[in-house]
Length: 246
Length: 75
Ligand SMILES: NC(=O)c1ccc[n+]([C@@H]2O[C@H](COP(=O)([O-])OP(=O)(O)OC[C@H]3O[C@@H](n4cnc5c(N)ncnc54)[C@H](OP(=O)(O)O)[C@@H]3O)[C@@H](O)[C@H]2O)c1
Image 1 (cartoon, rainbow over the protein chains, first blue to last red):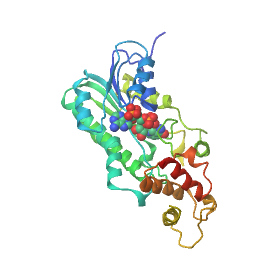
Image 2 (image 1 turned 180 degrees about the horizontal axis):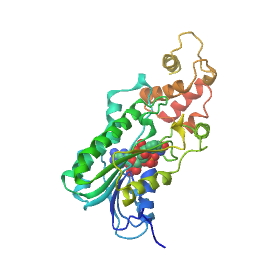
Image 3 (image 1 turned 45 degrees about the horizontal axis):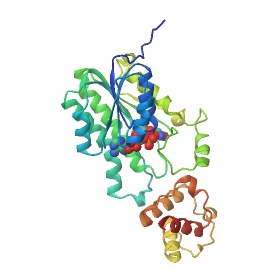
Image 4 (image 1 turned 90 degrees about the vertical axis):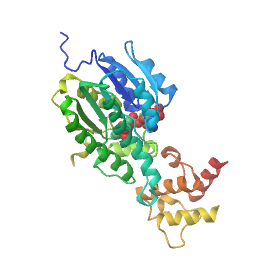
């Protein structure tokens, strides 16, 4: 019995932000389902750690800062044709309204919103996205669920969600699909501003009683990359242990 | 440093009365809440180019602790 509609055999998948957290877990889980991975990030040592954990052969690793055009060029010049992309690279910075500077907004929007847009454009123009390929963008429930100090982050993820819908419409003629996943809090390196005690208290607000794990986002990405979701495009999949129910 | 920091701290929390000194336990201030917490972190980042992460911030109790923490990291 090897019926499995979620299998990724024969698919070449690019994962950004693969040196940590959700991207790392996504790359590893995809490799377990048979995909050939190209992983990217900036930190060589941590990216290599992920690489070592990939199951199977033929994977590749590329260092690039995708917030710069030169980084996007460098990356795309070395990529094969792709069946899927999972954009996990992202940053968060919490600043209350009074402390926001144009420079900090630009910096954060650059990596969370402009980088996935420009990278997608580059892949599309260079014809690196095969027909029927699947593009997955890691957004956040923060796109519309407010918390103190999150204005810059929220707006970057809101922009990303709208981008995904516009993109899904435009690339549908090529039968390329684009979807976003918006997780609630996942235990990674992303938010060191909260202490462990504060995180524990905050996690009790989740109806399912805890924060999420990186692989719980990775498995959703796998669904969206696989042929099981062939008729799914432009959707924003919420994975948040029930946080935004009320 | 002390007087300047206390001024910045009061400004950040929008405190006008003369109720803050180095011995003040800042979490006991009426103005202390999650916005105040993030504002103090942002102020210290902006003024001193230091980011105090949650687990370290948790250990600080008085205004003097904040000043010492900044001093320690600037050294
Ligand atoms: N953790 C959460 O609670 C949570 C919740 C909702 C959504 N998300 C989203 O999920 C995504 C992944 O977050 P995470 O929690 O896994 O964070 P993380 O552990 O901090 O990892 C972030 C990743 O992004 C990469 N990155 C950052 N800036 C980059 C740049 N300029 N160029 C290339 N790569 C860059 C980092 O690579 P290097 O370290 O190698 O530079 C790292 O691999 C983000 O988009 C985040 O907004 C996270």
